[in-house]
Length: 160
Image (cartoon, rainbow, N blue to C red):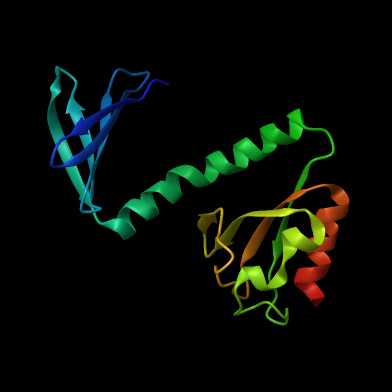
């Protein structure tokens, strides 16, 4: 898929691509942080027939809705390509010592070599969470590593 990037002086940046069905779609990222989803007229690809203004929260929600299935697909593809790599989805139970605490407190990567690549909370995916991301009961933590390292993460998250 070819994505065209165009600087918009004084405004920000525009990314556009054409779908297989021939529809032109763009995202304008304003310097203010606002994003506009632009759908172009099929008869005139230079004319926008619909523009949806998105605030930060709406843009994040849309990105997560579109990105979550892709993360799972990419992990599955990675498993096929890299022997010995596994991913686990680990639930955060209410009685874990890490519920309500920053993820970095568990020191998962340092202690096991495995990586937490996403956290799923109430159907929302938080990809590549930072160490200050606060874990909550009923979160699902997606961990990638060797079978041994991911098993160690499971033990850490369950018992500390």
